[in-house]
Length: 125
Image (cartoon, one colour):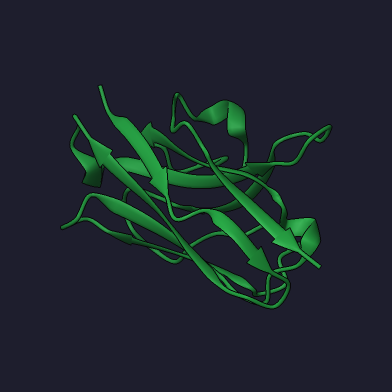
């Protein structure tokens, strides 16, 4: 049973950058597709990025503006989310998620069956 632990969140100012990490344990990491989501207070969980277990380029929502970049390092059992030019509206709890051998619908949170505890990102004006 894979377990996920996010880290790297914190309080930053608008315009700053942050890199979130999600380290996996207890499973064969390279067989899991990974996703990043976020949830702000009073809002639904929002898809940010995903990488399929089989590799390929990261997937982002159509609304993405290029400020966030996802990567994975199978040697470290870790995925990363590099966030730049942060805005106050990026304030949310950021979660990573995993699903084994999943290639499609990676933008849907319902497709994932393993979740981390989340890391808070707060961006001040």
